[in-house]
Image 1: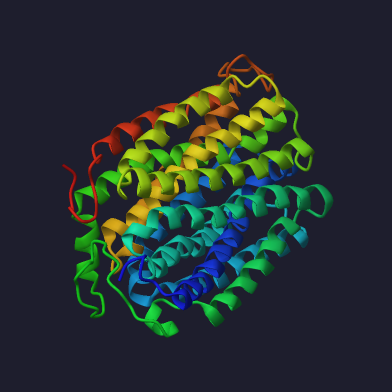
Image 2: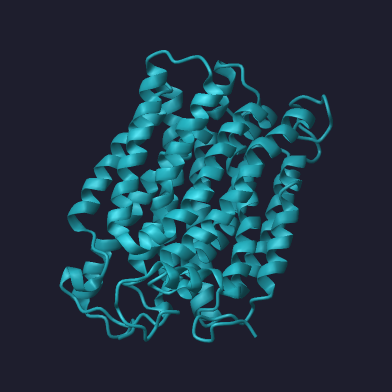
Length: 442
């Protein structure tokens, strides 16, 4: 059975399965990137500099990196439905605790306390991507995954609008603790929806299972063993190479997302809640949507479902976008450059962590592969917290010690991300002909 023979009832039931999963992960983003939105406000309120706030981010990123790797095999054994419900309940409760603590007047040992709470949040967040990849790997043939990955990534990109645009609106008009409390409620509501209508496999929803044509094609449906999962993922040279590329993606992606709010405020004097800020948050979402759709379409239609050629192209254009951002002379130009960068950064991230993990891990080890790839991305992300935070604290946006927050001809922040885009492109270039059907690049 392939994508041409799916019945109309099956296609409708499949939409009913993945649509709430996409909305759930969008709310996960709102409960994750709310820290990015409130980071500057929190730092000013408690007199914490970028390096100190970066410690909190690093703790969260590295907790996510470890968790997503260890929880991948767990999600493969439990099933994606159970895993995402568990993660949703956990991240909802942690966001509630953070909001209530600050609402109650918490004001001491912020770095330690927030590092622990944000790390706990990121532990539960780690089940999101794993669960979605695990569920969808049984519902989509390999020839459908590129285009679908773009469509699904578009839904997930709504999370950036929820977190950045809507979160910025909340921060500008309500008590800042609502940036944590509102996502808590939304995430919990989506957990209830998933419990009611999401299923791991077509057969559980009244439809026939089918051979999806990935790395597990032709294998039986016996319960998966941990030894099988580990061997399938960690002895696969293609997955290991993609993991190295995703390390580079992680530094670029989080290096942009973690600091663009402060960059706009301190360099271009764009406050949270203003029109330019709102349009930037929306631009991040639209960029993610465009990148996901374009990357998926190009992969399936132009390169025969090979993922590496498109990823290489996207890495190359990332460099151009970051150069434009470095030299952006006005707030609007900076906003547009950030949105442009997101097209190519999020496109390649969704392709590698989402689609390629299903292809080369196979449906049985899809969550473990996704966890390993996403984990490598967040290992690199951790260095953007205290590391890039220290650089910006010490040298400012223009790379001159003691220069403060004045606009410059070029900004070291954007240039510091470019080497990782270049390296990621060179790494993924070695997999130009890799396809799940041939098991290796040649």
